[in-house]
Amino acid sequence: MQYTKQELMAVVLARMSRGAESIAVGNSSPIPAAAALMVYAQTNRETIISILGSFKYNKLFTGGIREQYDFAARGRVDIQFFGGGQIDGQGNINLVGAGSYPRSKIRFAGSFGSALQYYLGRRTILFREEHSKRTLVPQVDFISAPGTSPPNVHRLGGPIALVTGMCVMSFDKEKARFTLRSIHPGYTRKDVIENTGFDFDCPADVGITPEPTPDELATLRGFVRQEVAEVYPTFAVEALLSEIPVVSQSSSMSAQQ
Amino acid sequence: MKPRKTSLVVDSVEDLIDCIQDGMTLVVPADYGGSPAEAARALVRKGVKNLRLIGGPPSGYVAELLIGAGCVSYLEMPGVILGDFGLAPRFREAVSQGKVEIRDSTCPAFHAAINAAQRGLPFMPMRGLIGSDVLRYRPEWQVISNPYAGKEADDPIVLIPALVPDVVLFHAIYGDRYGNVWIGKSFEVMAMAQAAKMAIATFEHFFEGDLLEDKHMAPSTISHIYMSATAHVERGAWPLALGAEYPVDAEHMKRYVELARTRAGFDRYVDEVVRGKQRAA
Image (cartoon, each protein chain N blue to C red):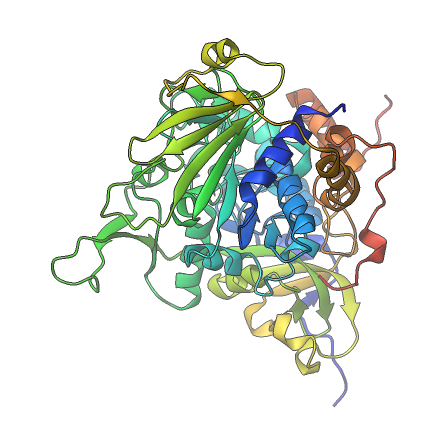
């Protein structure tokens, strides 16, 4: 069955997120939003999910955005997703810019909530579609949030995995190091090594990332595609394969925010 | 007593932003919660300079527009992003070329700083940050040892200084004749208004009656005691979404991103959309 890279990544993120009580999706995160919605559908809408920028999928937080940070600060977010202009082999993330600071040669959007949430979310899955030496670097140029912290620093969680358009890696916080876990169909171990800027462990028995099942694709292209379009209309249409048009939701929603 | 329209409610967006002067510290909320897009266009038309813009996080279209138009000399923010439409071209160029002094922050630090000001406190402690470059480039942010952790314990924690903006500018969903405005679930905007020296707002719908006397509306209403001025401006958040009132104008935003890639394209956008001059193609 044909599928897009984004669909495979969303499925991988969703499988990793099963069993979470609560899932938080931040800014500029269409693939994680799709994954969260997929888990929501698969758990018969029992998982607590929040998608930044969505009204429907923030309805549990009646106190606005500040309540969401407070919820996270009390350690109630089980799974969250962070991208990164740069991600390094120690799990440090850079959302600010490449080159010197503050006059970044290539400026990214900014750190957003990461400088708090990376410490306090229980498990963070790093995601980055582009798998290249440009994005996966030996050392980030700016630490928006560190991958690990000394034992005296209050920290409830951190990165557990990195999912790219090419592979899945796990993160060991004791060693502050990634290990290759599976390679997406169509890529080889050599591709991963040649396109990763940092050192990582590479066991001999690394398998292929299981492809999306027909059930998973049906959920993505049905429920998820419809719902994710509220915040990510372009992504819904371009990344999730379906012939059925996305229906605008604005008319069906209540008049109040 | 006859209902009165108080002097708080002014006639136009131009009158509303009259109080915003060059060099002021201005806070605006995020694109998803009451972004004052039409008021920002009015600021560009007024030609305000040297604003110290602090993004009620994250920043988006309004920050991008004010930066592109040369209204901002200092920017403090956890991020500038145009939602589904990607990175903000004028912001990126201004930062890379050093045209704007920049302080990178993180969203909860903004809320902590506002929360402190709202309560009349000098600072608010905040977790996270330690070991990040966000903290390294903010030498004014003090790190102390948590005094309640016990004598032997070593528990460092950051203190975020209070932020008292000169002016907070936002777009509310309802406003009444008394200068009260209703913000739905965007309680962070209420906090900003209470923290600032001045709060001014455009509002989408005129509310007949007193928002403070409506038991369903009152809890999400910013009382006029915190407001300096309001103005009724329909589609005041356009081209951004406003709650469930209207969705983002995707075609417009795509065109903006396309034009703003170059300085000339941005200038054309300002001429056509902000100043309303139609140009032959």
